[in-house]
Length: 354
Ligand code: FPP
Ligand code: MG
Ligand code: MG
Image (cartoon, rainbow, N blue to C red; front, side):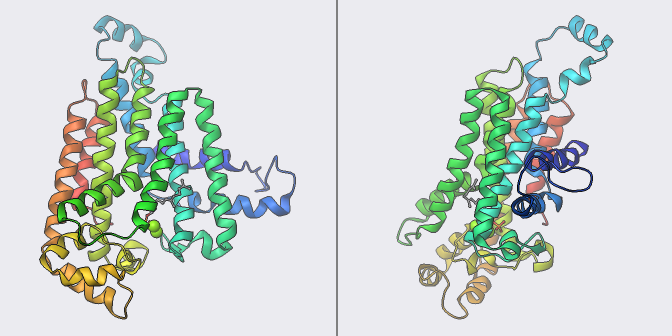
């Protein structure tokens, strides 16, 4: 937690350095940059959950321990007598820390763009960037945050890490495209669920998976098997996380969520609870095909979904993904405190309240 608070500041400094008076440094035209500065800092200042950096820092730490399992007792004893000591050896290295920053910056950039696409006026209980400054500037600010993230990524100096992290941006775009394309309601329930999970991987889980993989690659002495475990942990955690989010859209109140309830239905989206409910109540398909656009559709659909077995089936699906994430973390050699946190984090997706 200290790491991630510090990180929020570090990110803001990387985005637009400000001197003590709050003025923007290094950028010639203050009239232009004062808005840019305020806009880029806007979401970071609100102190979000910082879940993505937390997961990648924990994974980095767990993998450092896992990869160094072969270190002899003597070597460990020697390290512990040095000032840097075992603690430094097992904690995250600077490049792993950068992965955490980049993950949060890509995430935030995608939210800025997402709020434009979704025409959302609020985010985390406050006005969204686009609500305050308009769509045109918001698109540019999202691009700007991505550009700064790319600079940090290049400073790591490893082409394979750049490639792994770039695949996240590609997935975010593909996931968003998949979500926009109409769901063929005549596809089999299995195929519809498969497409939904694929979309969920790209839109949400890929960011967790690939930043975990990067953190693992950056662990000295790590091998391909470890990279794969880290990726699969992130992928399963990310899917469980998004499924929990999709379920909460039906059960939480607007206050708890910081955004309107049944927001997904109003956007014409069919998430897991809806897809399951369609099997039990095929009449939902008619509304789904018109993206719940007729008067009263969203309310009627919400009522049907909430009282269907789609809710429980979604809960079981969340459990199965978080269980897979737990298995991945548990299989890491030389488990340490970070590994245990990763396990707890995966288990907590089953009863997330917000
Ligand atoms: C939030 O989903 C949005 C995403 C997880 C990804 C959005 C991706 C893009 C807009 C592609 C562009 C990407 C970059 C990197 C600039 P949501 O709308 O379901 O959730 P919400 O309730 O938080 O809005
Ligand atoms: Mg949105
Ligand atoms: Mg969206």
